Length: 269
View 1 (tube, rainbow, N blue to C red):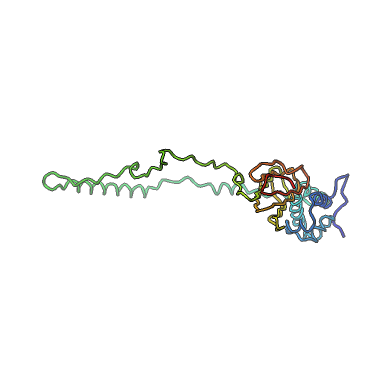
View 2 (tube, helix red, strand yellow):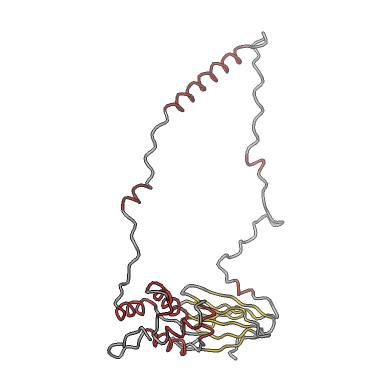
């Protein structure tokens, strides 16, 4: 028996919202299960608003959060909706007590008088010994030979110069790594600049190079001799760089696109 309640107003239920987003992203239940490691029967039950397989409210909220991110949805409204429909409470993260922070503050260091006294005694003994040593000359008033001068740091430090006498320019550390894409290969960098996106990348043999969700700020780079094929969900949140060229957004927000790139000029296949 389904544990979900009938959604109010025109808002879809939590399970229906997750199912719609998955279909819009062009993903199957098996693909979502693989990327999230949530078993297929649990994914199917949640999409039918049956949370009995989750093992409790805490696990149900965890599965909702994981599945929402996999299909490009903000999980927090769905978790709040689940709590409202099932009479549970969203528990905020605990805040550490103030006294804990106060405990870890380092106490002001007190002066170490014992160490200071020992240092003073050593200094006095050293001064007396030095005076006694320098007072014993060889009868001609000659003192012990002074220590040889220490070579200056400028004399021992090698000077790095080119044959023209000037230092070579330092490479710009901010240059993009894909700007120097190896010739004869295709290099694709995909970066989730605007939000969460689900991405699948395969090479020319059909071998899967990556499959999963990219959170905002995450990026992945792929290289192949002949071809890189991409499936991108929520394409408007993704920035593409192909063979060193910035192609901008992969598509529109919420759109699922399929792209193919080769070692030549970036062309959409």
